[in-house]
Image (cartoon, rainbow, N blue to C red):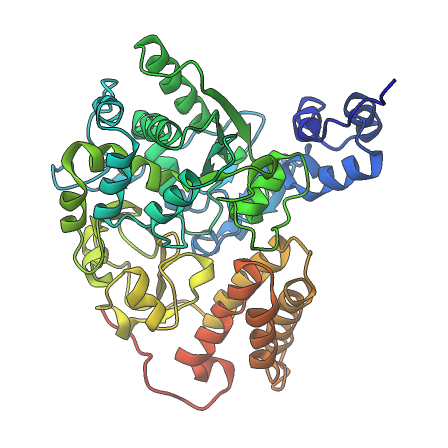
Length: 512
């Protein structure tokens, strides 16, 4: 008689059903899944929503929220006798200072957006019909046509990497292995970023249709939707759209759909860490190669795509790849830019790829105060000074400037901001969200945070080794978190040297 096989993929599900890490839960899940109790406990302590199930209200400490006095919000909650803890980021940057209570499902208000226009690929203000015309057309024209349109569109991954989508899709089509998967990465955790939240709430059918197109083109047998746990009803919007599409007869019944909750780990936005979570493990990035297109979920070819990328597909197939390409200014297509911090109208604005920072600020009603700096692509992108306000907001231009577009989570800082404190806020985030797998990141993030604190406490030599630590993290970290974690500090030191006790350089300054 063969021993029963451990059901590792069920670990997170069983932990969630049990209400997270509580007395006796690890042993109970071990009995149900046959996964060793120590492994179950390790998983439970890795994810913040499982590790602290009774924490009460979570108060965001992503950069935008401290700018809006999240500390004051925490003090109010504590004074009222409310259990509360700080959270790394809640994806509500437009509602700063943000908080979330898992018990009452604190609702998410809709963000400001670009007015509806036929020249927008996603068009958040448009209706969200269930006709699925692009899916029908993909059936009629076939996979090769879909791939050709995708290539001509020039669509690149909108989650941060900016990798050409058609290359990933063709790589999967070329695999000899017939067992294939499509995974939606909706675990949007980059501070300053909340675009995918709005896409799902406003245009869920675009997402469901895009996933159905991908599964059909790649002959995938299953689709997994990994949705950020802190978003609550966002997942419900996708589930309702899928049910509508099924009732309308658009969904291939041979393809299974699975919804999975994220459990509070920023690192799971990295594609291989997300796969580890889907397989019931701690979300630690895998070494690459092999890449997911070869060995992904369950070791099989897997397409992992961001929400915004998937939502672009229906318009590309309906209106043509060349149409999408021409929408961009410096690179193909439109882009969803999130603006928060010191702007009059925080929100998600769809604009041509390569729009300048100045133009984006105008869309958001202008700066509240005098512009000092901005983070162009979330915490990972570091800071640029006000003098860079006319820079093209695209992947290549920002890369050449020593920054990155990333997920286009733009945080705007006015001249009231202490850049040492801003850099410290980002350093705390990266230290807390490092998975701890590789020492350059695990130790490096701690060293950077400690150095900033010592400098703030009056040690003039505290930052002497920052550049050396940053180099080591960039060269030796396994994934992008460790490779980018030093950038907020090194960029702030570069553009605002006097605030760090360094000799002044050109490139800083403020503008209105």
